[in-house]
Length: 351
Image 1 (cartoon, rainbow, N blue to C red):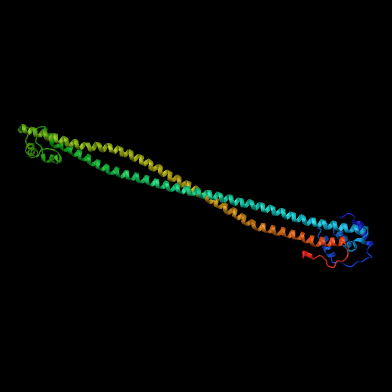
Image 2 (image 1 turned 90 degrees about the horizontal axis):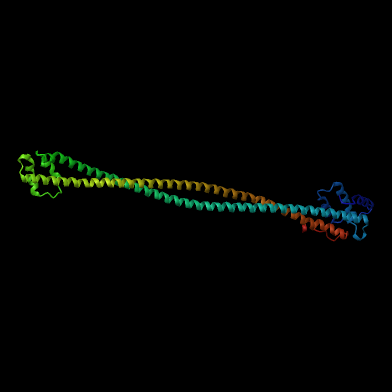
């Protein structure tokens, strides 16, 4: 409550006999007093009653009580202005806080977008790694398949060579050994073994009859022929043993190659699986990063209405203060400094 409120009431009673004409500026002062949010109603009524007999009296004709009433009304008008200013300040602070939170949200969007870009780059790298690992695994599998097929084919050839050697050795044991022992034998059964040898054609033509003879019936030529036949057969068998030995050695090499190719294919398959797992993990991180970007953008989008509402509230608070100063305060100042009825009162709303 303004100081001197009681005395001002007395001044009002003393001057009640005078009834100045209503001044259009009274309305602005009356409205200003009514705007005071903390002033008791009894004080407001008293001050409103003092307006005509205080501010309504020309400044140079006012007495002490009237001057005091004018000051008290001025204090109330200033308190209302400060009240409106505090409202503006509060709205300004609220606006700053919202703008600061907007900056934080924008920073969150930027950070989430940056993380998303990094994860997308990681996904591209992991995709390329998986493609390379898949190609390497495919090549290793193809190499293993090729070596396996080659080993199977070589194995068949080796088995055939072994079969030829065994057949030749069996034929020599069955048909040539009896000749050496002095018995008769079948040259026709031995003839296939002489193919590709350097045995003289005349010897070959003579051998059927020589082989048909028993040992006691053979002459020196026959013995020489049998000996030459034996050498030819031994050379043939020896020639057949060569591919078998080579095949056995080659088989060992092929087994080692297949083992190495198998290990290589398994390692390539493991690398491919690891690359696939890495890509899957990167894709999961990408989805998480995308969700964070959407979340940040949603939060920023939801912030815009709050920012707009705060800006509108601030504008209204400023407008209320500006209008109060331009109209209510001006009405008071005009009355305070003169008190006489002006030709025109200040326009409400600053118009």
